[in-house]
Structures are given as structure tokens and as C-alpha cells.
Length: 230
Image 1 (spheres, helix red, strand yellow):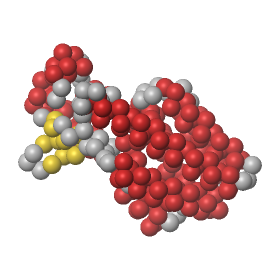
Image 2 (cartoon, one colour):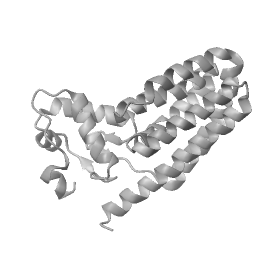
Image 3 (cartoon, one colour):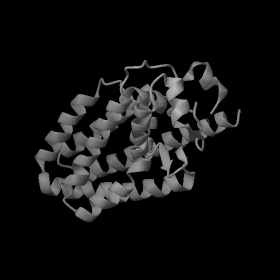
Image 4 (cartoon, rainbow, N blue to C red):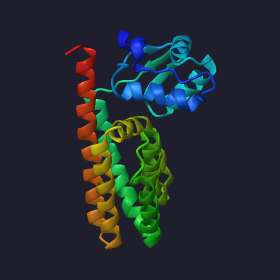
């Protein structure tokens, strides 16, 4: 782990802080590139940096693993995950195919109910600046049409992609400008559905996913350069 972490990149959170606080601190450092892909995270060392016991750090690691940010290896501890550009593109292409199909099926199944629920979800996300909350609401939003498809195989396939999907959502949520762009992209999807134009909604959804892919690639490249000291 970079020496600058020892000099304050990760701040102490206090002895009474819950696992959520540890999770947020470590997550922020990963997303900003202060902890590089491939680096091992030692539970005891991280607990000392955060000034907590190992228990909340252990729980924080579990939470980070569910978002695809780290891998927990048996008997070896946690390692910050990294994905190649090819791996990310493979996931994005599958995601576009699956989610656009899900959108068509969900609208056929739910009609105006889907539109209403998307509008309600978007209302909660507009002014939220907390990264984890933004990711949570955005993931829930996409799940509306995935689960609304009522296609169990499709839902299972999307679930298999979730580690990479959530990683990308986290990178997007940490940037104020990209967060606003996401909100407007979701509004474009909603506007098309309100007009009854499912194909326009599908096109807007596809563009939204690829925009996130482009942004994520730029962030990953920045982190790689930072880790090489460029």
C-alpha cells in the first residue's frame, strides 16, 4: 500500500465507528486510486490505520467484495480487484443486450406501473451526494426493469455481471459531473417511456450504459497511471 496512506489518505474513524464507516473510508481510497488494483489489504493493518478493532474491518471487506471492489481469498486475505479493458467491454456488451431486452419485457408486463416506479426512484437520487446511496438507488433503478422482465434466466444472467456493474457504478457516483449526467440520462429513459416509445427508451438505456463504460475506462486508466507514478 502506498506510503502516503500512512500519512493521512485514510483518516481515523474512531473506536466506536461501525463497519459502514470503515467501508466508506476504504472504498473512497480505492475509487480515488490511493489503494491500487492488485494491492493486498491486511485486516489488522487496516484496523490500525482506521483506529478500530479488526471486526468492523472484516465486515467492511465483505461489503466491498459484494461490490466487486476487492476479492477475499481463502487464507490470503483481501486484494483490490482490477479488470482488463476486454473484461469490462465483455460485461458491458452483455449488459446492454440483457437490460434492453429486460426493458422491453418489463414495459410489456408493467406498462405505466414501470414508469411510475422509475419516476419515484429518480426523485430520491437527484440531490443525493453520498456515493454509496447513489450507487444503491441507481442499482435499484436498473433492477426495476430487470426484475420487471419476469424472466428468471435473464435476471440470473444480470446477477452474474453485478460485481463489474457495481464497480462501474461506484466510479461514476464519485464524480459530481458524471453523477448529474447519469440523472439526466435516466430522465431521458423515463421521458421516452412516458411517451410510450419503448424503442427510444431502449436506445437511451443503451447510450447510458456505454457512457458509463467510457467514463469507467478513463478512470481505470488514470488509476493505472497513478499506480505507475506517471
